[in-house]
Length: 167
Image (cartoon, rainbow, N blue to C red; front, top):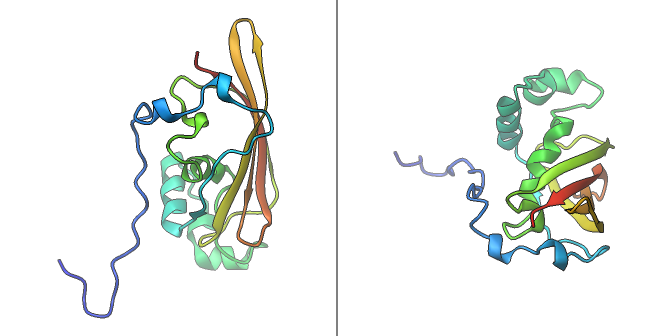
């Protein structure tokens, strides 16, 4: 069915590669990680559709994310994304060849601080890097940090974690 004259088709969410092996050869290995070196990241426009899709997928149907009237009357003054949206943002802001996407990576712990909510329409920017790497009990560890900003350079959330890297 064609669109009526003068209208545009609804914006589509970018499709994400689900074959994590596809770009594996292009990813840095543990040996290639340089502590302090920034990771290449991509800006991402957070849409209301992406927020709603994420909320439905995780079963979080709070009215702050769906009901404009409710959200407008809240201390936030409008619709927001849930704090855990950083999960979606992590994949949205990293290219397919990013080392954090390596198959076999194990999350060995993380800690996040939340500063302000992300909102529909925010242009999200990620600053990320490897902080350290070490070997313990024949396992390769990488310590990393991630900071998400909106287009006003306000910190949305920041996290530090450790991953066990594939050999």
